[in-house]
Image (cartoon, rainbow, N blue to C red; front, top):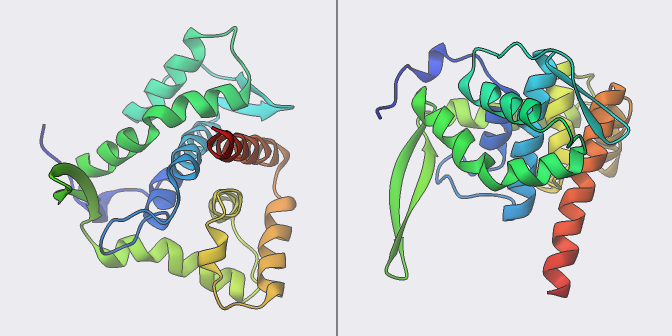
Length: 220
């Protein structure tokens, strides 16, 4: 299967931008530990379906509003899984499940439209695939835009509030606001805390899933 399309022609998706932010824009190396990265990507996919008005979140549960499949193949896949398992509505369960495949699926989707390129990296006699941005400026834009807006205490649109929420609840904000005064961190948290209720519900569950993973790792 070949990558198709060009990066310039692609409409940004929340998960794609989070993927960019969670990786070095030149080397493709992750800025987050595996659990936080995978869970953040899983939450991003659910936010995409929320934006498509297919699902919503309330009190730790996912509610399917519209079964009509989205045009995007990955959104379609996630929605089909939600519909096929109506007995499972717990948001944390779905975040944990989707996190097991989110990285490769999101990376593949971005590669297919030309946002990422694959590189083979050898380490300890093993080879692994690293996804590197095809355009450094495109990859760095999400990070630069969000950092500048928060450091200048600006309001954010719905897209960037969701991106800020993923950044905050995966603890990527520490790097994003490195060197900024504490008031910038407080501004970011205030923006996310004042966001729409379904997003706050999802982000609370995201924090719980990541926290449970860290605790499990420390006690194993």
